[in-house]
Length: 173
Image 1: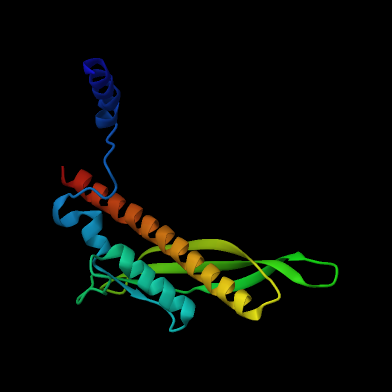
Image 2: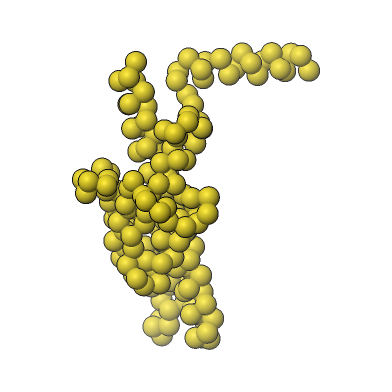
């Protein structure tokens, strides 16, 4: 048992020397978590826009609500399409992909663009003879895709904020 503990400590030593630290670690007011909680999300007023907005707010804030006086605004411009991937000889579609591409821009309170990127995801679903089943499968694919894109956007913003915090800490030394 002592040998295993000793090996674990020895294996972890190089991580401290290389500057490794957890992305979401608490570093006071400048933490990535606090900065994410200070982002308001602006999205189109349609199904996909609402799915993205509320998925992001759920992931970035403790309450799931937009901050009262946000320091940042995240503007989303989603575009979605469905592509048929399995077409039978009689032209019946048996499988489809829902694709979501979301260019986004993070803007400061002064209106200056701070970060710009794109997140994308794709979900497949089966198509059958029942229109109700097709509609349900399509809506489920939209939801899964929006959640995957929200995860990607949160990760990209987290890395951006972490790099800004690291750069500020380095320049202050």
